[in-house]
Each structure stands twice: as C-alpha cells, then as structure tokens.
Length: 116
Image (cartoon, rainbow, N blue to C red):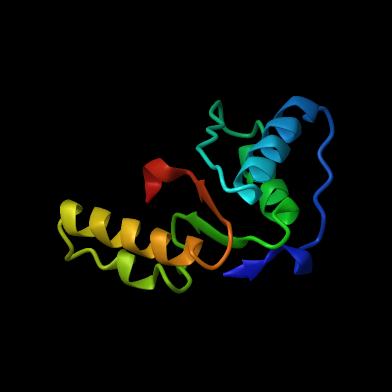
C-alpha cells in the first residue's frame, strides 16, 4: 500500500470531466460513502494516467493499485493464489476490503482488469 501524500501529483490536460468524477468519488468515500468508477475505451486514451491521478489525489486513503504482472501489497497478497476457487477468492477479497476500510478510506485502482 502507498500513501497518496508521498505520490507525485499527476497533471492531465483535457480531462476535467474525468478528474471531477474522481474528485467527487473520493470526497464521497472520505465522508463514508463509496462506489465504483469505470473508465473504458481504446488503448492509449489515458485510462492508466487517470488511475495514477486518482491515487495521487487520495490523501489519507489506503491505496491499492492492481495491474497485470504487479505484485499485490498486503492485505491482498494472498489473493493472487491461483489455487483459490472463485468463491473463496471473492470471500477473501471482501474480508480484506472490510478489514482495511475499518481503519481508513480505501481506493482500489485496477488497470486492465481483463488481464488479471
């Protein structure tokens, strides 16, 4: 896990609407709400940059960034065990998320989820 205060701020041009959506989601999560936000489109449109922006803006959040080939940081390390059946993995994910969110807001950034 990383702390967003130590992450360099990301500059994005022409993405004001997407940045506003990210800011609104983070504000809601900081106030005890939450929800998903999905960015989709052709390769090269800047989805990964938006995820980096979200992580950089998530001050006082626990941030977990998942992408194909990355090592997953605690408390999610065990979830990479391919021997777990999908049901057991789902239960493990919910347990890890629940445990983490009792301490602070949690931002999970998943890049190229179809490759995980």
